[in-house]
Image (tube, rainbow over all chains, first blue to last red; front, side):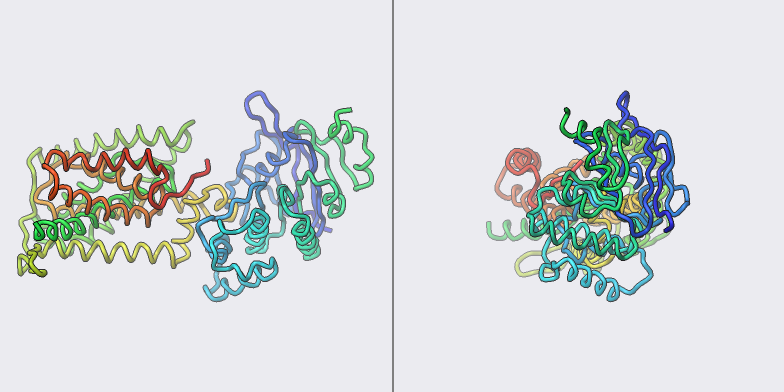
Length: 237
Length: 293
């Protein structure tokens, strides 16, 4: 399968702190790469470097073989990356439909066509009944679903999910897991950050474990589950 | 007394409409760019001088100066954005630096207008026919009614733009979360340049209306409008365009009614009482939004 996203030696420093330290990762189309690590391991910083919110100090990011390092976030997004945030960043005072229209503003399609797509996406996320409500009226879990729907609107080839299950009711978690599986089946590369190891192990094709910005383990779910370095990082034993 | 109150209400609406435009342009700027434009009043007065020059040199009526000011100031704002803001963005604290930089711009702009037009107060010696219109027992100058009509049209057009068009929705989204909108493929620099140009265009139009409604203006009048803009923005809620429109009208009405019930000197402090009161009692304004850094 073709490589959708790749980083080589990606490094980000904040003063004397090395938040991401020479990270090499790659994910193919249709693959789900789990990224685990304790708080402060550098997971979100890694995502910020990939999507262009942070300019890495060293290393490179490639999307479908094309170097995008240091490009502004909107350019990286146009190359096919979508992402969600740990705390959902929905447009609170806008309707659900309008939230979904923002990422497709510059698409060459009629308003009716875009609204039709947005409604179909909300249907898929079981939010269609609330389409005219303001996003601030949704629960935390529903806001996560809305953010996921918004991310999928421009049909990105790579999706990055930052703690999608944090603070979400188990029933909604199950629904989200099904949507993520669907997304990977549709041929998108999925980069998934989560503290919820059960979900990570269920969804991921491969997993990388970060500690203090560095990859300490990489491999299949079974390799990671029993890896002493991962156990030590998590349990401190 | 009733007549005075009616007069106060009508004038409050007219002046409030102008305050609303002054505030909405400043709040758009702050909302999208997090830029504190201390030179906003000077931009407004530059619009007044623009109408003055068009009328006194070329005989262009103030009514025609409205769209011309809109286009000219929009273009000037677009250029000014690329001169000023990218450098600002490279500083450690762009918000504070914007305040200091635009304070400098306000001094420079006032000095430039002083150089070009001297310190004398200027008036556009233009009258509509009829000069005034009777509404019930109240006589209102036609120029003021025209100004009110223009503010209403512009406010409606602006609200439709922000709430019904895709670029308008992008502007609102950028106000709510500038970081999230970038990772959705929206070029925040281009959007910011548009917001700056739109705000400057609105300031130019407002300046023409100021020249129509108020008896005189001079190179130093800008400070007064900057202060009004800040009061309106705080009252309406930082970065909330609809809040600014409502707050402008509310402030205009309060100010004009204060002149009916209070001594002149007392009436002048009403704005500051509103500003301080809003900050203490409702810091997010009447329709405020909370910002996330």
